[in-house]
Length: 505
Image (cartoon, rainbow, N blue to C red; front, side, top):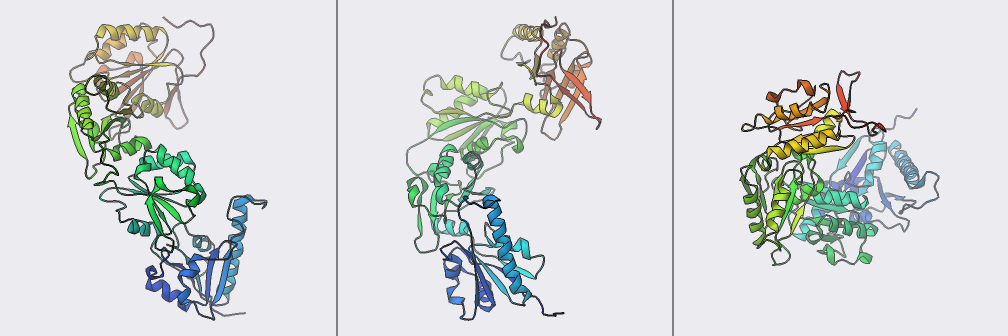
């Protein structure tokens, strides 16, 4: 029985390419190793090997781990993934043979071994069997930022790193939401990445870096790069937006009206996140502005919730001076919110030339419905019970018409400190068309710290429990409830409607 001690496995990060950026620890481990292993394509050349050429000895055992495929086209029965899995298993077995023989094995990795590197496939197969050490290296991301001379992220900014191999729509969504970002692995994915940057509104901000710190290094504006000239070792960089210097001197002011959803950041869409990050100024009702994280360099302009027109005019004036302005609403900006107020003012002089965009958000009715089940599964009507901007007589007419048509009702703005009787009046009217046991979802502060979602019956609805933070969903004659095995009561409205049955009076 052999008593030979197994060798040690090293995953050695070599940095981005310049040998002088390799750590002292990495250089020493490579120089002292018995076996130096590196991945390469079929041509046999290896950037990793070229970085450590000065540390290699004549008696080093070199293990060239040659990929069987480099594109997703293969006749392997398991396809591209199957071919790679077989390759990694075979490569790990070759290294294990050296380790079992007591040899020290250094697996080379450009950048950092555990950052989009091939070494990690060896690590997952061998580290639990042999004594292993991973030596970190300077990543290509850090090298790219250094060569561009632009900060990647600052203060509370979040850096997003994505591979260019993601589907174009997924890339666009992630880039739209990012503060700063890096897209790795360009090469043949360059056209898709370019379109994704354009769709996300980030193309003009994007920088291009190729072979950072290596021979043939190239940097510049991403939009100016010829797709045919792009190698695999290149990336797109969206630097920090703080104290951003715009590429041209012309003002590019605009107003973007965004919805924050019913609560905090979890309810934001990627597109909205991007618009909020790109804004110079945030304008909105203070309660909604407080949902948006503080960002260095941005100005915040909070106001009361009853000055919509004044708020819209203020935002448009800022945009006329070249500022990028995000007007912040709760929920969806087009549902009883700020989009209409902004567009009404923007239709008048001197604001008709100011660009205005409206970005959708998750409205309160959908959020409340999801918490309760699926009460909006069939036709429904959304009605605001606030008589601040329309007479109560109009509200009554609309409630009567919608109830007579047997629509599920989403009742917004049901009550406030100054409006205390509307809910009782609406309940009285609806009981003339709906049975007293009609399900009603009483949803308060959905997504917030005081969230409460209850299902009551129309005849038992207590107006005293309803305030401005509450939304009511009143079922139709077809709306059903069931108490599931967990004890939870859920409500839904069937997608089909009985044929030939008149709507109840």
